[in-house]
Amino acid sequence: MSNFKSVQLVLKPPAPHMVGDGFRVHNFFPSGYNMGMLRMSPFFLLDYGSKIEFPASEKPRGVGVHPHRGFETVTIAFHGRVAHHDSTGNSGVIGEGDVQWMTAGSGILHKEYHETEYSKKGGPFQMVQLWVNLPAKDKMTPPKYQALENSQLGKYQLPDDKGVVEVIAGEFNGVKGPATIFTPMHVYTARLKKGAGFSFFLPEKFNTGILMVDGSMKINEEENLPVDHFAIFRNDGTEIKIKALEDAVFLVLSGKPINEPIVPYGPFLMNTKEEIMQAFSDLNSGKFGVLED
Image (tube, rainbow, N blue to C red):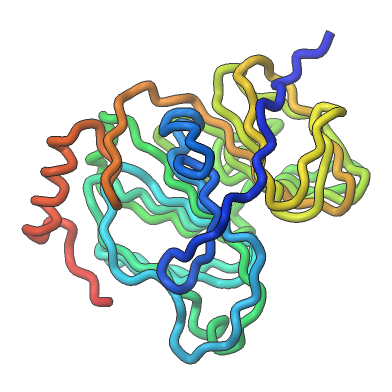
């Protein structure tokens, strides 16, 4: 008797839009399919930059200085290179296979741009950005920046050199990821050769989705997941069985829901309208620090 975590929907990529002039993204949630702000909690937003070719540019494309409070931004690079600077003095560059995990917490200013040398040459660009909500008790935690190079990620090698699972947060088959997290979750990418397959297990009540970054695969022996599509699962089982129909790369998101009110407004993600108003007051009074554009 199987205990599959069944697929509720396979979502095609929504129409893309630009974030700044450097990130062309498909917003799967919360707005892409009107699935609500809590359906994938603790993950609040998924912006997927499907593969695109950027022409060479002397001026790096990107997003200028902007504030955040109350959540974390996670950028996962598949192609291209992104530079980060923030008002706490942190900076970093991520390339293929790397991750930027920024805890905005009590408030931060930051900017993200195509890395200078990548920008001068141009080339393929493919990224994921997540907004990960923070529980009310942690929303005002001090800001933090984690630059996670691919070599730092937990690695689970599949038998017979069929592929690798790269663990960013949580764990996979006992291999742990390096990201510091505030809510129980599992975030990992998998890179499989054609025909490779395996089963993995996640808690029944965790909200779970899989983004198909490259190639395609079959889920639970019945559902096909094509490239650039997102599968959202019901909260009804623990096992997910996958098989790569061609060489494949995919991202798994699974986390324990945060069952608290959410009040989002622009770059802030809080629990009440009063907290949103306080965020703007603190921003205007300089409490988020200073960062040159």
